[in-house]
Length: 324
Image (cartoon, rainbow, N blue to C red; front, side, top):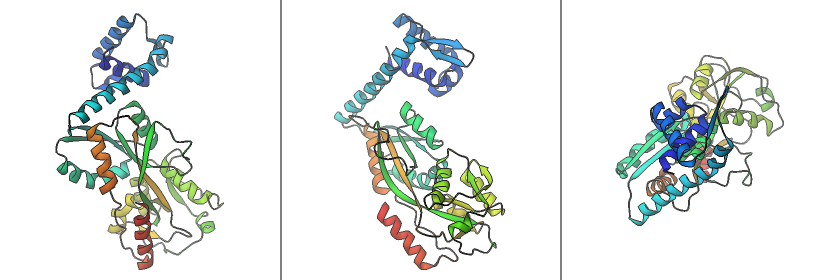
């Protein structure tokens, strides 16, 4: 069984659709169909059956799926071991990241990494946290950069993945300019209008947790939107307050579109982690990127802001220094 056929088989398994599988493996639909037929002919069994909801695995397909995943993993490890033994430093690495992290943290950092490693080709995919973990599991990306939920304990984490926290990003409360910037307690904030992302998003989890951890019911929302950029624009227009990672709104604060307000109680942070699949041998290109990210992808210093004062700025700097 050629790895190419197994990769196509797993793409069809995930998407349950020939067209979407063809897009995932960058082949024509006819080529995907031909490869599945070739694999079925080699094994002497039908792997898929067509239903109203899409292609479903037959018992033979279900039996093949975990073995195909193991074979492709071993194929990747074999190639990595040979590259490492040969002293190769070239290769391709596919990064997955949340849109906020990709634009605010990785975009400024990648040119320096590529200048120091010209023989490594870097690709980037932007997606939500759930999609990134699925892509990492499916081998579509090599490493994911995303915020981690604090309620995912060590025992609950998927042991197939290695994780490293590389920064503690500060969460900030923001509002439209000229709305008072008065300091409020959490109980008062809970009565105010907020703009947040949809349920299931890591940013929404941060928002809900900020109130739940101190026993306060989260405020009712003025709007639920799909991106931090949209939250910043709605906050600037006066739709409500926002609680977001500072790196996502640094430019908007600097321009004066929105204003940072004091957050009552202790500073809140979001752990920024890089996550990659455990292997007996890591591809040399991925190993170099992981090392560089660990050593040089440092947090962006917080901006000075009106009303924040040097004490707040110093607290923020100390927090970053202690958690990076």
